[in-house]
Image 1 (cartoon, rainbow, N blue to C red):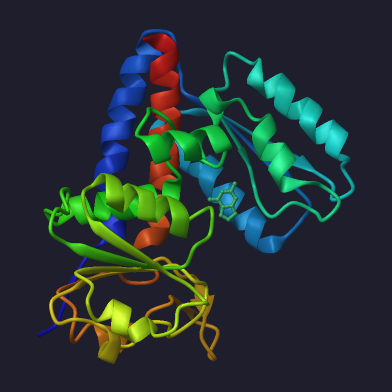
Image 2: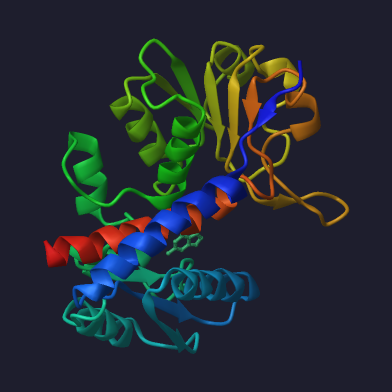
Amino acid sequence: MTAQIIDGKALSAQLRTEVTQRAAALTAQGVQPGLAVILVGDSPASQVYVRNKVQACADVGFHSVLEKYDADLTETALLARIEALNNDPRIHGILVQLPLPAHIDDHKVIEAISPLKDVDGFHVASAGALMVGEVGFKACTPYGCMKMLESIGMKDLRGKHAVVIGRSNIVGKPMAMMLLAANATVTVCHSGTADLAAMTRQADVVVAAVGKRNVLTADMVKPGAVVIDVGMNRDDAGKLCGDVDYAGCREVAGFITPVPGGVGPMTITMLLVNTLEAAERTAA
Ligand code: GUN
């Protein structure tokens, strides 16, 4: 069996069309959704990410501002900028690109963002809301993975076993909470798991979010399972690849997400969705 591909680019395009329409309606009411993106330092990868985010805002009709600072910006100065953006009525979402330079405390910076504007979903208030099932912003990458499952008719995961590989605050942990909220039975595996293959072989849904190539190989996948690959790595030839051995797993899985063109485009799309919802909440 060859797996069906879950096309993140196509699904993103569809969702962005809906976002564009809702943004236009809101703008007509006098509230144009606005996102502020802050980049500290000149990491080439981060530069590309923030440029893509700002471009995506323009594409769907949002207002956006990109604030770029030198790597020696003080933590105090950054916190002051966040406070100003918290109080700026044209800005509905604030995103501070991570990682930050070592002299700045990531945690302190994220906690300074108003939970009402935390469109990354990284604030403890957002994580807590997800944990207890209250309204809050969902972290964009796992939120995108849930939309991908929904697109193949798997919105309700009652009776399904989902295995998440990775326990980061940005992906693994919120992913597990979202799968649980969708009624899946959830197992979280990580570097301390004794027999990863024994776990993944039981899974109806596997989400790989480790940041290492070939974490999931064909022999670890139950025939017909759904494989979601959050990884973004480079292979020996410098080509973009995920955490999953795609060629091998594609022959066993029922559905699989490619890299590139899978989860990646969904992450920015869900950032747009969160920013739109933040703006809609102010207009409600
Ligand atoms: N760095 C890598 N991914 C992300 C993300 O989703 N949000 C932010 N703020 N920084 C990142």
